[in-house]
Amino acid sequence: MLGLAALGGSLVSGRAAPAPEVAAAIALYDEGSYSAAQIRFDEIARVRPDDPEIDLYRGRLALWFDDAAGGLAFLQKAVQTAPDDARIQNAYGDACGLTARRSGFFSKYGWARKCLAAYARAVALEPGNTDYRLSLLRYYGEAPAIAGGSIAKAYAEAAEIRKLDAADGRIAFATVYLTEEKFDQAFHEFDELLRQKPDDFYALYQIGRCAALSGVQLDRGQATLQRCLQLPLPAGTDRRTTLANIHYRLGNILEKKGDPVAAQAEYAAARQVYPDFRPDKDTLRD
Figure 1 (cartoon, rainbow, N blue to C red):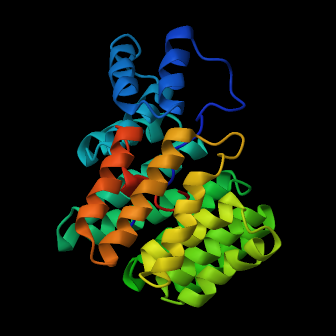
Figure 2 (tube, rainbow, N blue to C red; figure 1 turned 135 degrees about the vertical axis):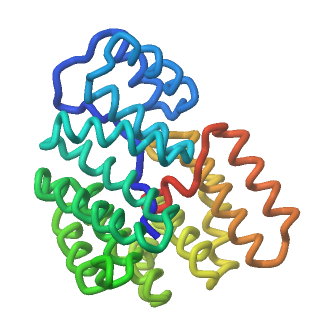
Figure 3 (cartoon, rainbow, N blue to C red; figure 1 turned 60 degrees about the vertical axis):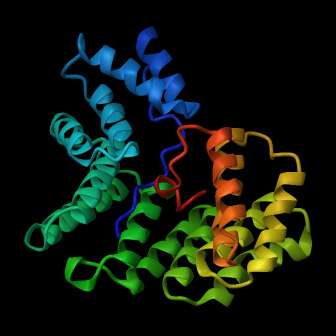
């Protein structure tokens, strides 16, 4: 329950240019070199201990490496300093969600409600940001009703996302359909794209992802992912992350098909392409 939102992309878009040492650390973060970025941000924090921008990145990186307590501490501090920053609210929601997953029964739902409140605040601050809406959608789809979960609200978020971006809307609806085990409808979100363009990289990958998550149409999912490996990556695609995700989803499918040796080979290929790969941190938009 309550997985992390996608971490890719710069967190400073549209803001004042950062100091050179911060820009260098952000560049490492943006390219997915999270281990190196964590070292650099920790060094910067020694001379800038009360900067919410630094706390935001340190919190995100702590969560990436499954340090729930560290991520929560950094992001609680950041949200107190800059409560109207949507990026910080969304990241704080991630921290509260991970804390909820690891808490005992009596505190779990309190943290879950804080997660929901933070995601909702991020959307209120930047209603046009589909990443924040995807965080809220996933919460609604996965959380129990006692903690504010609601499939109806998840579909409503998917509809809002589709208004903002057609591609993200397909992912959003497919995500809710997979949650409800409406597998045919999840695949249908991408079938029309493939009828129009059989080698559409995006649609091929999403078919493979749906197969890996649902356990149905496994042969088809394996074939579409293998086709992705044969095609050139679309312009602007992060090569390491994309190739790692393809190998990871192939591994999921091979596991479900009862071939653990081949599955482990695909997981190893993902780690070789991208040593900092953490598939559970980017399952919504991979």
